[in-house]
Image (tube, rainbow, N blue to C red):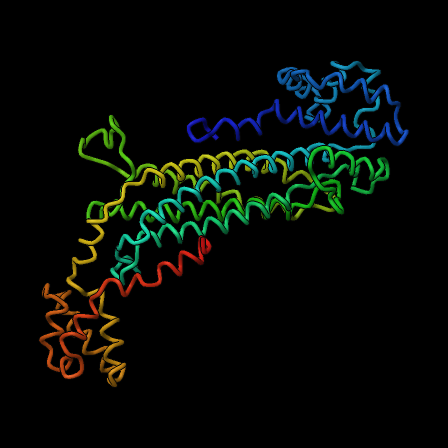
Length: 435
């Protein structure tokens, strides 16, 4: 990803320096295990660790690869230059390139998942704080973009919290599923390397041994990982879309924080645009774009091919770096989001009580009116509000057929906002717990 949408900690995971350091650790731990098993001399295994504090020369490795056209061989050649050809004689013994590449990739994805999990926890904290802050801030709920019935801004934040909490669980599951390693040799049979080497390397690097690998770690694991990232990205867009709608001039129930000195438009000085949420919508599309290639990587030829390789060299860094940036940006956006309760009430009352139509409908049916007749009575008064700008309560009070069933107090009671918020505490307890 370009620096504009990147954060240093996540970018570092995907740097060549980090990659080569992980490759070294895989090879060095494998040699230790082989020395323990008496397969290679102990002094050779110890000699390789001389490179543990060395900065690998990325340019030199690239130079070697330009000749060998093989990245792992280029690295191993450079490692031998550092520790000595004789000392490095047993490095990579019985291993194949995928043992290094796949195990390294899963380590990188696991580390990326740890950052994303931390990001998600920060976002959840912001959503929870805003939910309780606006638990009783009444706003109109909308279906199809049209006024429906009253809800609260706190419930909106709580809904997003619950969704992101599910995504946190998905990320943790994805991390667990991807945290496997394979040091099983050509076609995964362990013919030239003891399975105990794999167990040792995985333990040292915080992984679980892949139960069965076919020279490569099965790519259904990676498909699940990138799918979890994509679902999270869609949830980010879900929140961003809500904010964009709330910030529309005709609505203006909330808006992104507008900093001193910020400019909204090069042409129109009055503009305050929802640029952060629009940016998040775009970033979500990028993260989701990784899913189809990841799913298509599951089907490889026989024990392996490298059709997945070029895909993963792109989507690994791009999807994780982008999602990390998006989660951090959304957390800041939620944390500083400006809420306008007065505008929420004004918008809800714009159609003069129309949003209470269902309460009147139910009251009529409870008094013995058929649902079809009750619907007709309520709708004919509601249409006067839509088409003539009438006041809904006034029209009901003046409708002889309605008044034949409901008295004035019964009609007035149906316009009590508290009716719609009486179960907010119950919903909050379900989302956040009874504390």
